[in-house]
Image 1 (cartoon, rainbow, N blue to C red):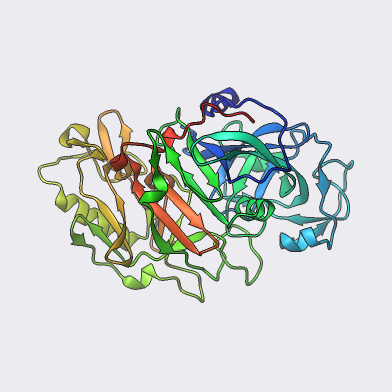
Image 2: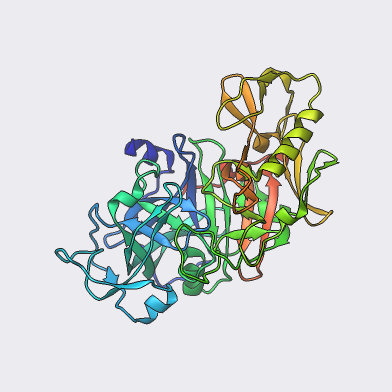
Length: 431
């Protein structure tokens, strides 16, 4: 299975990374695992440098890797207890090793709790620093590799990779913390805290993960940054993570959906579900790569599916295919540039003029041969976040997370511009 994952990622040749140059931006490939529906990126770490396949967790606190496999590097250093590194990472405890000392188990080091949201588990892990390398880019093609010689991350026990895609060495958490890659790389290379992801829609293709400013150019010469609309990034004062300290806020990415339309039909919704309760943290809308499909609180789900099915004329339902309820014979739908000809689902944001349109390519899932299902899932009545925009709805959309300006930019589908997330030119990569 591991060899399958390496096949999916683009072939990258290795050369010595530079730590002196200041890049315009950085880029890494993104792929989709067909078994788990997780999205993976590839960073290089350690000395000597080796490539690591990491599952992307958009709201994760930090990067963590399996240090049991084993971890071999001449440039690794643990973070001493009570050091500035521990403060930067908001370390949870001071760790002591009760077995033979090794990387991931050293005395007097501070520790955090690496989290695996896919298996809904976490475990104490040692905080440390090591070299991390990514490709520099001008927004059109990758060029030379750039290294951060002291990138802060967490070691984790091998069992924490359970539930991750085959071959994954850990998780790249991209959340709103000072130690997640977007913040560390911005501080190291002096660009605004900003990153963008463009998820591929097929397992054998590669999307792109950018750190730093645009442009974000995709073949044939399409700058997707020109299609971005922006909406404010909202804060949830209550953590939504699997483990957290009392009073800790959420590090995930929340936006303010104010209404939902199916075609021109405005859904009847309990509007209190669309806002974040500042006391409990319940409600609101977040963007997540930890769920494969958009998940809706039950009443929102029922309102959306009712309007969607009412808009389908002379279309016969097919048997449900888990986890989907509303499925149809694929032949019942025409084909358009943006997928099956179905009503668009529009997430209305801060005004009627700003909305995220979800067309057929991102709303209809081919659940089995000849069967298309509406790709939204009922999350239950007591789900903490009312709307969780999942990975499938993000595919072939460029989404920019601008922490410096506290906003999220979204392109809606790139298919309208006759390109996809798989059209970034990785063919000349050397890392």
